[in-house]
Image 1 (cartoon, one colour):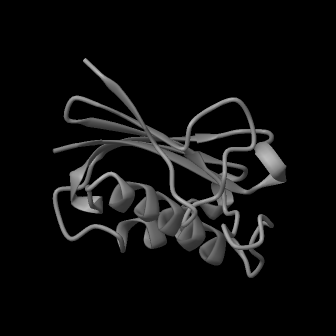
Image 2 (image 1 turned 180 degrees about the horizontal axis):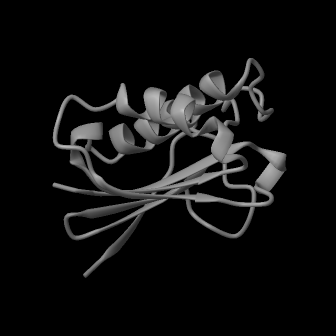
Length: 126
């Protein structure tokens, strides 16, 4: 199967040797997104809910660039700095889906790139 690299200026540029997203066959693999504003390259401020919205918008931009939508996400992985933020992150995350939530795991980690508080990666399928 061909491997197609997906890039968009509507999501933050990669901050390392990886692609924003990769499409192969019907699958789209979106690299972990932290709450970077694609226009400025800086972390958003305003608390964990604002950060989670920014992450989900970054994911949405990559989905759209590849011809997918949130409804196509089949698997997500959430990395969070503190489980104390779980309920707030979960509330924002849930607002991006109408039904049929993806499979998911959530892990508390000690540190994320750019010292972000949340990072989410997804796999989508047409």
